[in-house]
Image (tube, rainbow, N blue to C red; front, top):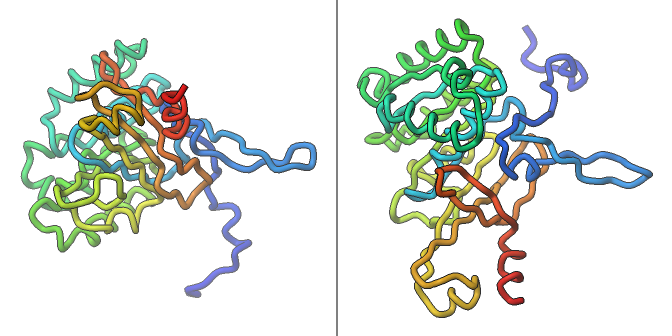
Length: 282
């Protein structure tokens, strides 16, 4: 059997590029290039790329899980099956969190709860420590429930005490998700010594090098007069930013955008940081 193929032979198996909605401005930040009147223009993808495996990374309390749960609720409300692998928080807490987000977003929770399938690895050491056991359970769920979207929160928890194996473990899950044709979000934690604005996570750059793209979420405490003046925000407040740090599947806006976690616990992406700063100068 030949170990090579001509590019043209891959045409029929190549996935179509379209967006899987998050109902945030991320849906506009991924885009394709279209030709219009002899000129090339940006065309918003309408969501994160179909069948992409994306990594969300950030320091604690930056909104990683909030974004992942919001995506799960939105997709479930649209009638698509979502697999949520909970590695950090016990499943009952996930139920409460997604119920509240569904209410805040005006979603039909009866539909949402029927379309989200949960694997609780947080209370099951075998699933958390043995990748093969977890992959087998995920395969059963995906095939039996006809799942198209998968979230692992967090992938870091699967190599918590063995970061030297991070690349190997992430590669296994990445390949599995690709084989299962999943649109997937992996949540990654940072170590305290890592730059909060970089795509690096626990295990180094293992996740970023393997996945299709990385979304970096960050928060900055306003604690100097210079920050108060630059951002036009009161002392002690928090500036939150989100940035797409690379995506091999489709073009994207690479700027940092300001966002907020609303009072009802949802993600609201407001505007590019550069415009936010200019607005404060008015």
